[in-house]
Length: 350
Ligand SMILES: [Zn+2]
Image (cartoon, rainbow, N blue to C red; front, side):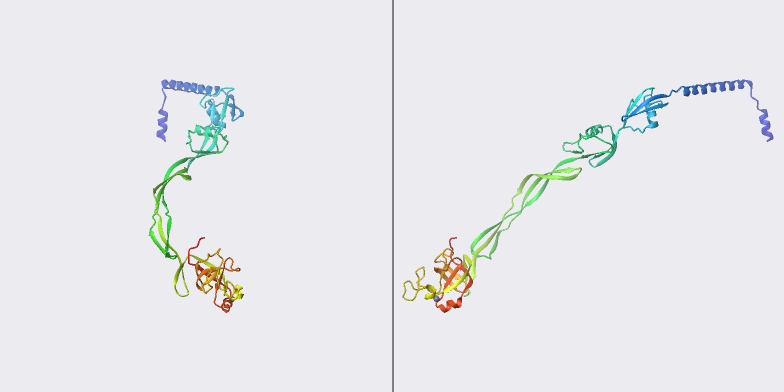
């Protein structure tokens, strides 16, 4: 402690330095005064600010348009400000602000949020430097007016030519063989698939297929038809175990008749007694038919009766009926009425 005191007491300032300190003090005062004058002399100006048509009067000491707007308005770089933000404000000035509208822009698969001065969809796209391809779609239409929180969607369309190979089916040709039974089947030639090229215009919308149309078909290889041989001969096995072929099968109502008066209205000795329509003498194996269904002279096989020939007619034998000749009237009565299958053995005119 003693030592410090001693040191302080010994410290004396020479007169030459005292003057210098005084001068520095004066200069400092002058500088401070000048600064204060500058601040005090900064004028306060009155300006009008119009934001999207809404006018406000502002008293401000701010130096530039930008500073003024930053104080009371939320302005972003997309907003249009007149005069330019970096210019100095002056008393009575009118500052006009066109606020940019926020829009959601979906271009293809990319979404972005931005601001725009564009009035219509078309103007927004021009402002953002977005070009539309010839077949691209935009929603809503280009002339639609932009409102706040607007969404513009651009559907990027692309037409791609695509080719597809498609097999061509073959037909089955049937060759009838009358000499073979109806169950007979034989492959004469195997079929082979052909091949064609289909050309499509496929429309991709934002990378996803949205439609396609067939524009061309080219056959690269014709198919080869399969050829099958099929027997057409119909056969039936008789009661005697013989297989015979027939041309037509009929299901008919059958009755039986003999030469008696009850059956034919004639007694032995009468003219034409026992003579059939064909002129032949009536006998087992001659049957009466409607000649519109079975022509006279047609050979038949009648189920349950046997081989026969269509050789007679009768007043009651019309349509799908057949009358079978029997030797005695008792046999006729015993036969009664039956539905039978009648096979025509000869080709008849349809
Ligand atoms: Zn009879």
